[in-house]
Image (tube, rainbow, N blue to C red; front, side, top):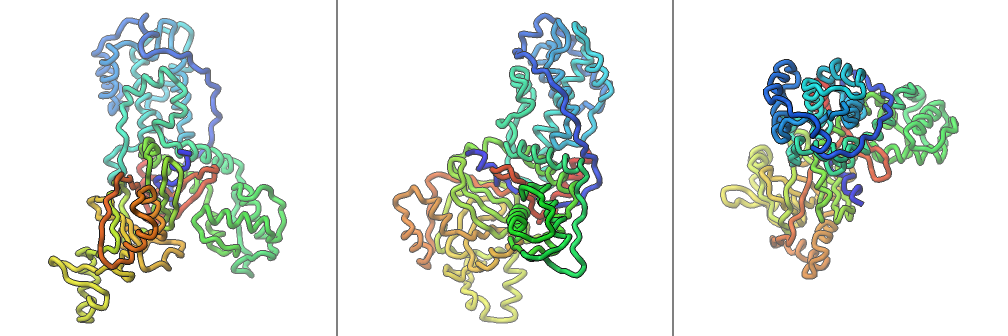
Length: 530
């Protein structure tokens, strides 16, 4: 399923924000508008004066950022009315109004400009209501306000400030209006426009707001006489944990038992797995601290990752092959035709050498690679090593080469036995490593920025699976040859490196990951200050 592909994209993501009201509003009962074309229903109204557009924005400065698009829209339509016909205001206008009033359902916390004017227009609407240019332009401006907030998200410049360099789909919301008017249901859900994961997070957001509303999120306290809980233990804390796991749907029922039984054990393992905690039946303070993360924080994490979904081109699901790395989950997934064929733990860059969020096309596999040591590592690590030990280079199987230093191929090479290249300005690639023990760590941010793969052999075999010239035996021989050799892929494979701290899997289960690079807070500040 293509949904499977979207599970890991981008992948990828606990922070602390100022308090924001997340009270769930009741969904209004909407009348489904009749289908209308972009022009046919408005022919009975005469075009309005084009100079009124600029006059409107002078009087409504809070909407001026949408003036260019509004002008383009009406110029294309010869200044015909969009939201009114001879019988009054169209029902699609009411649909837009309802969506504006329920933007919190979309993970948006933003004040609607001139809302009092908008409310007066729709609450006092009557049959055969006369068209008014000011009302027409107000609705149009707020259409652009809505699409920019809900579909586009924050602008490219701000995204770049956050270190996010994945490509965004260019969309004209001038042209998109034709689609909405023809098929108003698209304003509720359009998987061609927004990553499907967005809608999955939206459903979970609704669930978590219901939990918040029920006020059942009481702190769990471990008995002072204990440091942990194990299967077979009895404690009032067990009953508190059981209730929390039931609320979060990690167990099917709350028996209220104080005994750590098999049902609770299964629920704890499930909870740990979906919260990036190393699975262990022993309940420590770490698991309890995770269970005690305020529901408000979880809600804000979901909202932040809904925003990240807006930045992903939904067409990425159409790629016949795709490799995705989610930094906060420390996982790589290889997809073919939308289905995962390989998953692997990875090690990513440490905080001072963060792995960059970007995409590029994989073009080469290098077997038995040299490691051309970056200048920064030479300066910070190798030169001090040489100063202490003149035999440092030979000890580490290194040599001077073209004015730099490189490590020779072999099992102790820092890149291991194979690397996967997707040329980019960040000098980031996937590679094997001799330090296999790090893949067992819960938090795996240890590298200088490149991505170490726990299953490099399996990845190479899967990439070359359809090439009859490359059998598993030949791949193994090339990896152990001790001499560097390059393979050029017949078909380039897009590699997406993303950053998601919350993600909903194919079963509808929400996963949370630690904000390893502390990016959520900054994004939240941008979102909730606007």
